[in-house]
Length: 313
Image (cartoon, rainbow, N blue to C red; front, top):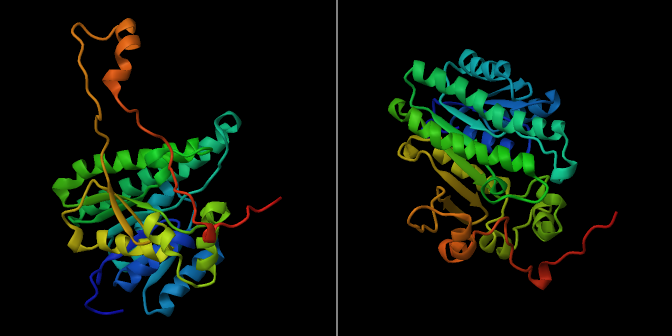
């Protein structure tokens, strides 16, 4: 690694970094000079991730533990400090899926996803931010959101709640940590992952990625859909001193596209003297509200040459 890399001398934790997007984040942070604490629930997967970073000349160590509990959060921070002497960057990426429609979702389906994504983000950020404040380190908190948390998605009540909650916490942390010089941002990635690999709409893109070929421009440009490596550059940038003025933001990235998501704002405002009774709303709501907001993501039709037959059971 270059001694002049932008993250030289810094130490990062990346939860859920044994494979996929998390691994791409950890590898890119290491390429930019950071020492990295890798986290996964599987020993072999974590060891392979560490080896991939060391093979490129980077420094890494693994913590094998499920994210969610305060104990794991403390272990991650303590490992960073004990192994590399400090902590500057936290990327909360760990997550699980338990997809099903509302009327079939069990308590365990809901609690498992909330515990890893939402509570795990909270416990890890609380531990990291406490260390950074006590040691006067102007650290970087980067939390991974999802388009599902921004717009909703069929069959993902638990995941949508967790990812929306993460963005809400990030906005709050940006306010609370500003005086300490610690930034907090959410990244909204759109990339080929194990989840998108099962969606027929993305089949041509995933097929190209698996072959090591460039994804078609329709996916990269029109949809902002790309590879894990396409997301990793933003993670490294937000972790750097160059992004010291960026905080409290939800930033989308994928393929060739970069987006800054708006904070929720009122899109229509109307007043009625004496307040709004049922009768007032029944007769006047449509005019007062205007065009209602859409939910879910709307994808344009796939070009014919990119269409693939749906898999059959």
